[in-house]
Length: 384
Ligand code: ASP
Ligand code: ASP
Image (cartoon, rainbow, N blue to C red):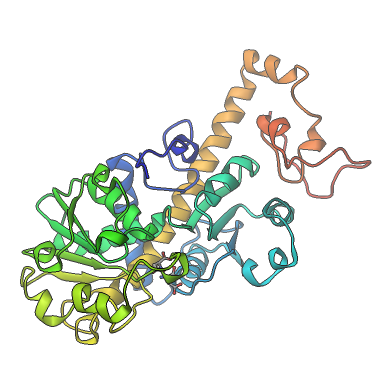
């Protein structure tokens, strides 16, 4: 495992703004803080009688879930609706891919529906990057969780939860406990906490559930829960990701609970005002005791509420980054030197850039529509 994400620049536009949201790796602290500040302002929208703002009016957000989800899917739907977008949700795990369609073909069909953003969840690590690399340039891709790699909106909603309950990150001790090895949430949280300046990040797990080289994330490793929890301000519990375990990593769930389950007695070793978090779904009696999950220190349901605001922030920021990029390209296309370059043989005839690919880079897009006998019906606004 390496904390280096070579694809990082893909998610930023030429001005350094978000245009996709694929992973937190490499994102500057200022950008993460901007996401949190924007989400804070959207929390107020969620408290209004009319919970809508017009930021994505006229845009279509398509949730494409190749892997099951409840919270992430529904909170992305609500977030897009509260931004006034049209929203479609496709549960691909129960549709065409199970009939043998490739990821490319599924996405090509979705592109043809002219969505402006795809929120993608996939069981394979790297799927969101792959899609962002191959989708036509003006479609924004938001990662809703890819394999064991990243769950960046979960990471940011966890950061918003911590900031709202603890005021900041500078003096905190945070313990992430449980199945670190298979958890995309753990990865996103370690990266975000580090970037936001948290000085004491701990991971607590049995040796078999710790990735090799996890220290590279700037974390301290504990294999004893009592030591790992000592005087922490925040504890983030993780579910055992049974669906990603090859087997044999744990003697039994009972044994795991005995050694690593968060009980009231164990929580007493943390600071008295320590908050308890969990991305859900929680498994009571496996990683967390009911009395703790439902107790006064638990902020697990607050996380769900904050998740809507964070997803609103990410959707609106990525859309605005895409718009800014388009404008930038249009302005450059109007300058004589660039126009000359575009007029050369590399640029396809205007109508071949439809219905999806409208940028100057369209000729390199594998999904650019093939030449057709007549122009497609969707109106096209010239870019130059
Ligand atoms: N919080 C997770 C998610 O929705 C768990 C779930 O699927 O219910 O991503
Ligand atoms: N809901 C989180 C995820 O999708 C955590 C979990 O499933 O345990 O990764």
